[in-house]
Amino acid sequence: MKTPTTAVDRPGLAILGARTLGDALGSGRNSLNALRLVFAAAVIVSHSWWLGGYGPEPSLYGIKLGTAGVMGFFAISGYLITVSAERSDTVLAYAAARLARIYPALVVAALAIAFVAAPLGALLTHGTYDLRGALAFLGAALALSVGVMDTPAIGTSLWGNNDRFDWNGPLWTLTWEGLCYVIIAVVVFLLRRLPENRRGTATAIFLLFAASTGAVFGKLLAGSFGPNRTEFVLPLLAIFMAGSLLATQRHRMLIGAVPSLLAALAVWGALATGYGTALAPLPFAYLILSIGSIGSASAIGSRYDISYGIYIYGWPIQQLLAGAHTPAHVPVLGFAALALVAAWPLGFLSCVAVEQPAQRVRRALMSRFAARVAT
Image (cartoon, rainbow, N blue to C red):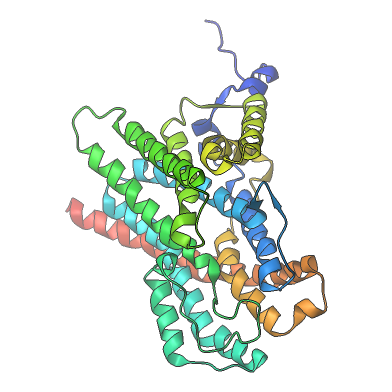
């Protein structure tokens, strides 16, 4: 019997796309964690201009580095969350996995900001610390409501900083990430109950993707987005749904050098038209996932994924550095480098002392629950 030809036998096939996205990302040898670390670092670098008071941040076709980083996060999340939902036997298992992934670390970070960073900030800036403000910040952070409201100020603990109110700007994205988790759960688990549902999930997610990109188009045609967060989130929803749509087609979607190059050109062309946030989500998500499928950086973050910790601690660290007047003595990239150096150990501690133990507790609780159900 003739042996099937593989990409290993004929390297040219890999260039054109001989592996599927599902095979490449499901092998365990992928670089998604490394990419998320890059995106977290990009967000910190991007925020340096604003938090350090260095003036307007450079952008490419109106897209700032931090915005691109958050979009990369949402593209990866859209893919992974959809795969997680499809593989979860129950809604409870899915919800427990999602809560254990983001919530314990968020709780610790919010407590650290409210009761450690803010008092220290007040000392550095000669401002005032307000316990009621700290409790209001803590409540908003833990309720995941920062994405639909202004972040509560903690007294005048940021007095004199370029941003005098917000102790953790990136938390607003968690509101919408959580909403995306709920949307995917509704789609996957509701349609799973329907008889003969073979392509229902893919169709539903395609419609959500079309609706979100259509909404982005509408905003662009009406004169772009307003300054509030609830409007700016539309492109992120489109990116998330693009990653989710690719997840539903992961066993049919081929990846390779040529398709990735075409996706990169499509993203560039979409941005050049001025309608990139509406036209680029799908090729952008494909490009990010294709890069993530490369196994050369698979060791990065395989044991200690510190990207989430760096993401949620970067901003408050930069606020403290700004309160210490660091921007007056270093250039913007030096300010960003100091923040990254300070954020790394906090990200590591969050991973080993909070996130990984939370996952172990989740697995133990779910095992006990499954055993009780079985008996």
